[in-house]
Image 1 (cartoon, rainbow, N blue to C red):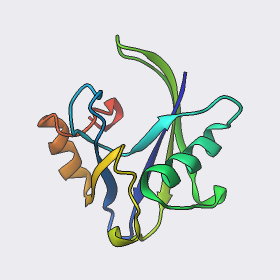
Image 2 (image 1 turned 180 degrees about the horizontal axis):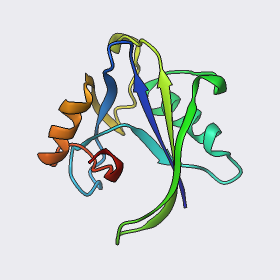
Image 3 (image 1 turned 135 degrees about the horizontal axis):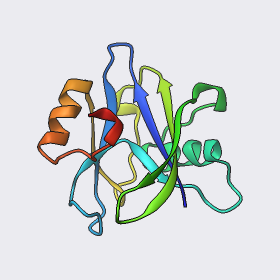
Length: 130
């Protein structure tokens, strides 16, 4: 299936990440970026816009999303096509309206902090970050 990942970076180079809140996740309460499956009839861009609205309560224009990478992931659990988008925008955490069914918490972290969280198995292991 088709999956999107949306990285939101502020002017300080920090990324808006979210702590997952779904009890059926492989690692409970793991941190990640906004992500999700693209729905039938939806383009990957439309899916990315929808997921950022659903999970964070944020609305973006299509031109604010920049496709950085598209690829096929084969990880033994599932095979899927993924589109990775970047949004560069200064967003205050208080302006986010998280979906508490899917998201437990949000924070800004630098890439070195995220990489350390991956080592500690607290952040989703995106292979391209290693």
